[in-house]
Image (tube, rainbow, N blue to C red):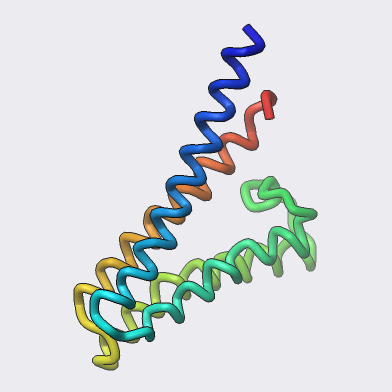
Length: 131
């Protein structure tokens, strides 16, 4: 029984690592394929998105789904939402300004979708008591 639980946990962790790696790989490919490094600007948002959780939420994502409020909690929710929207907006703005190609923009958006799925899966895994 113990071995089965450990194997499931390892599989989930390996899957999350693979998803995150695929997201970063797509970020880099969007730059390399089109010979333009402007799309890497949205990779900065991958660093910014978890910062409110680390600084204001104590490293937990539980406060994002709670109805509790307060100055710092509301600020963390706002900053998380703003940086998430920025992750979508940066490739769209770069494409509108003709700084990147349409293909690079689509690769960036797919990368962001995989990143969001990774974060949601990690959040769901954290809700389980086995961790």
